[in-house]
Length: 418
Image 1 (tube, rainbow, N blue to C red):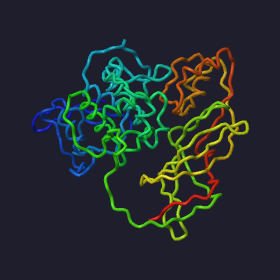
Image 2 (tube, rainbow, N blue to C red):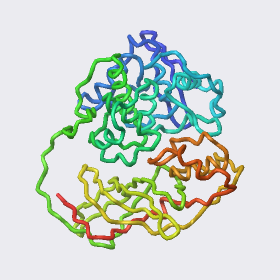
Image 3 (cartoon, rainbow, N blue to C red):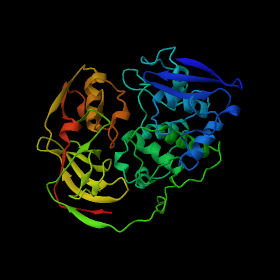
Image 4 (cartoon, helix red, strand yellow):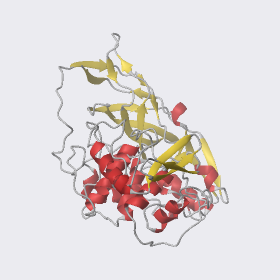
């Protein structure tokens, strides 16, 4: 829906709305654009990026004077932003997405972002305009749209990020290129990309601005959260109180979750990287927090006893402190059979896929356009598809994260408490 808002200066601003939410304003006249917001203080980490993009009319606030910096950005909203930020000629033939009506508020922006190479769709000719866009998709979009490619080894570049294993296979090369171009902005810790989390309005503002800087369309902003790719890059210095070491005994259960999908599909013989989130504080008897909620457990789904099992490798607290961890889930043996002719959209709805599972589904169903955004990091699916040619069906392991992935520590874990 488009509504017209008039100010005393006769500035006309277009506002888009989706069900249950109001989309950000897009200013018609950048000269008169609002550059200060009631909910963005001058000390806020993304304040300079937000101000500069607002001044250029690329992003704007809401009628109440706020910006809502922590609100997630949808794919449609992101399409509108990059279309304003990077006006360029189209490179691809337009496409009509079946979930984007011709009178949808962002239809023109979605079409422009597609033909200019910034964004692509999903299987079944869908765009998913109201889906929150993950951080890795934002970086892939900007790198691809600007035709950036890495000039050195991709994996060497990505080693900078402590959560590099969480970066999807399709995103690794573009994110490496974006890192070299100093387009990546990670708050509060530059070493953590958090690739699968939904990008906020503040984060998108910072990433788009850095993309403008990389293409010589804007002046550099000094920020400690811009990733330079140098090993010496650190988070802002803080004073660390004296810590006490506490041992969490073997056999302790760590409640974890994976909120990016309702289920995960992998083949019986594949290994897929997976990062889980601690869903409940782990505390001492006197209620000192040892492992705060929101901490990350980085590991892999690995073949085990005819099924799949999550094996933990690293624990990363919300403070950035890391520990090696030995832990695992129960073995998961539940399967789902994918048969020739099955509907791909039904199979992968709300589902994360291992690269092997994605290749199997693509080969069995004949759908060559499996959305790589749904694939867990690792090898590209193209090289694996041949393994499943000629098969009429395949059995995949079904992991239901909120019920199957309860993790048990298999070895005493010593952590520090303040």
